[in-house]
Length: 127
Image (cartoon, rainbow, N blue to C red; front, side, top):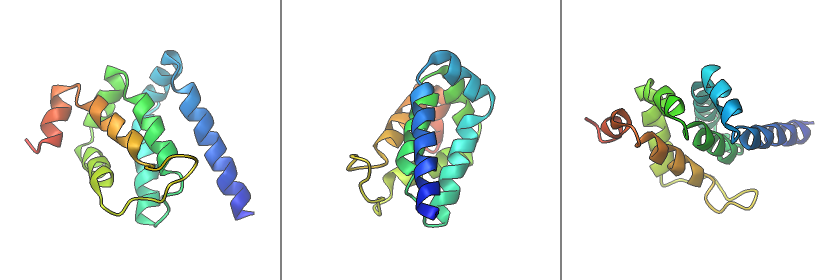
């Protein structure tokens, strides 16, 4: 039963990653606080030792931060941004899954997107 629930969660996140690439959907998700919710879900799983869906969360954040509003939403919470950076640079990486050797690769893309804003660059540089 747990395996079925995990597979269903992964499928739902994968679908969300795919539809979040559509600008109108992405913008609506940002309005619904998706960047904060995704980061909180990722942090919660991380703190509980569950990183099995981290790659899907990272891909979703990468899609959500392709717009200025998505970037601003991530920059609005410095603690969240610092967690995302810490997760990305940690030496202890989640194991490869679903064909991705580095499950946090897309988290780097999300952080790069956030750096398009001066506020994002300032926060990530510690200034």
